[in-house]
Length: 323
Image (cartoon, rainbow, N blue to C red; front, top):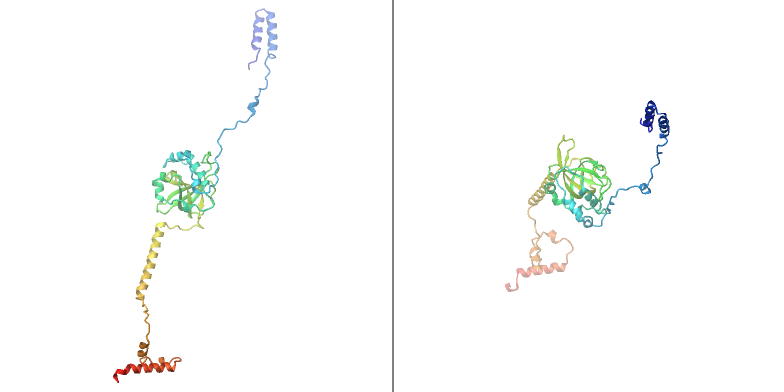
């Protein structure tokens, strides 16, 4: 290891060999005192400003308080509209500024009422055909629950949303094509049995291509909806009948009921309508002889009235002009 003074020691040996003793003494003294001449290490001076911790400058998270109306909750700023317009469909990019914006806006939807009645109900096929037309709009979708997941590690925090992110996969069945819908939300969804019908009102995000579970490398296009929560969770596992079959079955039942009603009416025949005809005193008198004696004697009858009727009939048989 290098030590200061080694060169001086070597120089003294060389001077001794050359016959210069004074040089030897000087070299030995300098060699002995060389270590003392080394600078003593001192503690580095700490600037007081260096003791202040440096906090990275990050904008504060924007509040997401529930709004009173849907219009207030969906009042996008120009910056947010630009981010939504930059979204591209059909790729594998799920996370982005637009997703955080919709998570914040979904959290601002009114929480004191069912918002499904105020949401659009687009044809499910149009979500895949024209996704840009529905981006950021409040829509209602329905499907059978196929499972859930925690996506908190996949979504980076932004100034629009910081916190957990969950997702539930639904299978859309109204078209009979069984297309997947990914419902993203900031609140943890409840435990939902498999194949249970679920209705969701949320903000449409995009169509993203994600790998299928157990699909062997295959991918599928998911319609992504950012929601506040779920509605109408099923009470248990059951067979879900596709809506076209439900409509067809309902139509058959209605036609059968109409047929039974018409058949019973035809079998009963036309209704007999009762026509009111006032009874005159003369008609009652002329029809009296044709009635059975029992019918004429039923009940209490005034004798004077009977006599008047007999006199009237007698006058009818023998008018005064015939005498």
